[in-house]
Image (cartoon, rainbow, N blue to C red; front, top):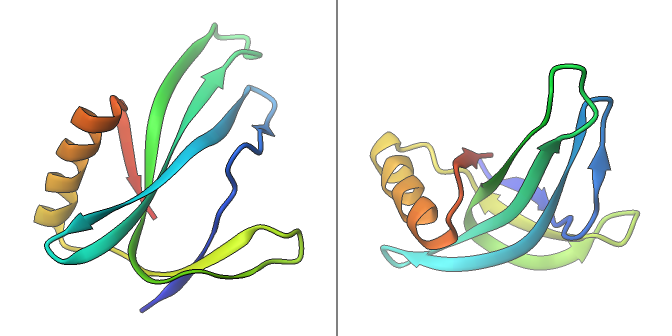
Length: 108
């Protein structure tokens, strides 16, 4: 089932314990299908338990319609098909860790 992905680059989100922000987006070809992803940083910097941070990637899925419209706040919207196949996820995770130097890959 297709879903709508909201592009939110350079929009810091703060919480009680820290923050995160996506700073890069891209599309790469996977076996003939375009895959949409974003990369960002997360930091736990206001927690009583110490500090921590990581670089991570979000994989939205296979692109069906790229930036076809905007939401009420002006953020671009894309239609994607989530990637459910475990072997494909594992292979994409390996690629993202190598090429983007991320420690975590999250599939939406």
